[in-house]
Image 1 (cartoon, one colour):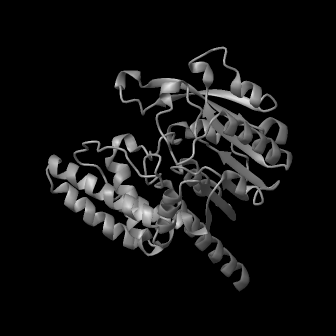
Image 2 (cartoon, one colour):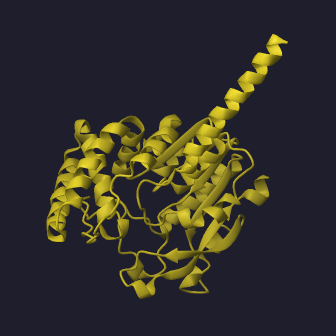
Image 3 (cartoon, one colour):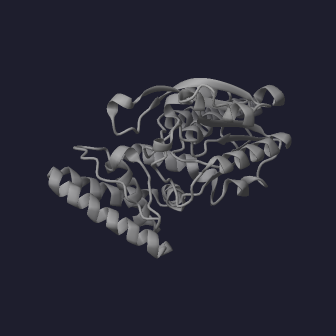
Amino acid sequence: MLTAHWAGLRKIVENFVKIEYNLYIMLAKPFIKWVGGKSQLLEEIREKYPSKIEKYCEPFVGGGAVLFDILSRFQPSQILINDINKELINTYSQIKNNCESLISQLSEIQSIYKNHSMEENKNFFYEKRNRYNELKVNGNEAENLEKAVLFIFLNKTCFNGLYRVNSKGLFNVPFNNAKNPLLCDEENLRVCSKLLQNVEMKVGDYKECKNFIDDKTFVYIDPPYRPLTQTAAFTSYSENGFSDKEQIELGNFITEISNKGAKVLASNSDPKNANENDNFFDDLYSHFEIERVSASRMINSNAKKRGAINELLISNIASVF
């Protein structure tokens, strides 16, 4: 009788904890704006999720919209995220390990920005951009927290949240003249920190994730997109480009991990937006399921050229499940 009573009480407590956890998670969203971010396509992407996710890997984590969605819905026991952008992964790491210190410093910057004129904020932006590039070049790990704070600040106050570096690896995106951006979303940063506690983080080439991936892993791959036109390729996400050669190598990698039994979903641009006869991805992923979904182009400097275009969702769902 007593045993049954305690079992029932334990079940109530477990359910309460689960409800509390899910309420926290429902509020989670990417802590930065990221070109190619998948928040607007989450509904379509969710349809490709397997019914159960024990292991999760994201070799190009970017803004993390899919990452945070996966963590909230499935709570995988093993998670690996990776990105070639060292400063991005440092920011994830600082939110995971030093969230309150990051909030304190970012709140201070937000207060300064809020009480300045636009001209003062413009000067403040370029001052902080110079400081960020100094930290980036110096590479002093003792300054990683400040670098993460500036990474978020610059993301919120630069043109369209774009991350672009020059040939020397220096961040060079201009000021966006934002009047009152939310630089420090304390609640969301704390939720993100909670979610990231069980996440392993790596910096480097996506191929370094291969040993982590097995037949129990769901892998979401969101690489630098193939530009639709030559003039569209004006951004450099890192010091290294991502040409058709790299797209083909990625296709081979996706085939390899698919053959290991991994469940794979990949995103990319649809060349047919610009040229209906361009079958680059249709040929490269001819043995996968390809779905065209509508998305909004948001980074063109000319607002009239922003609008709905197709993107590709490439998966092995039909062959794996």
